[in-house]
Image (cartoon, rainbow, N blue to C red; front, side, top):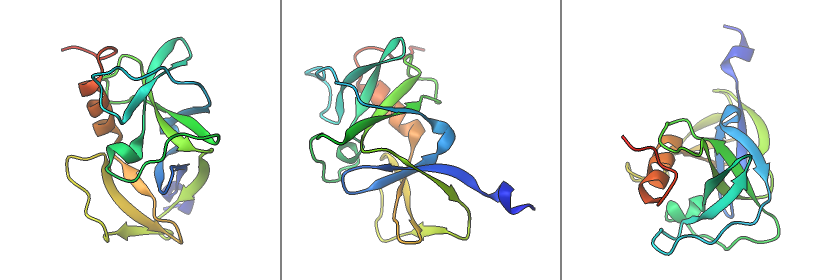
Length: 160
């Protein structure tokens, strides 16, 4: 098989102390917008909503949701907007607070391997952590993120 077909264009999304690695196609845009205040009955990791295109999308603090140390947003904070692919968010997208802009990387089997130093809960937002040369990014469970957001939002959720 051609080596080009075994590569995946991915984005390294910088958080405060960690990075997420996601397929490039999942990221819609990186923006800087003020957030609305979160609803009082929502969890602290659901940081509010922001205008994006013609809708209000939920924005989360991934590290806080994953039980990792979290720092309040600062001057470099951006929102990385993800396409909602699970079909449970009527907004069609959600945002994750990031520290700066994601970096485009090409991933293949030669540059990555599983990193098993940390056990992640099966029902949490992290599938696993990998080692990529000198990086240790987290692979988020984007479908679970959507379900967690939908389960805690007071509006913007598909009903069955």
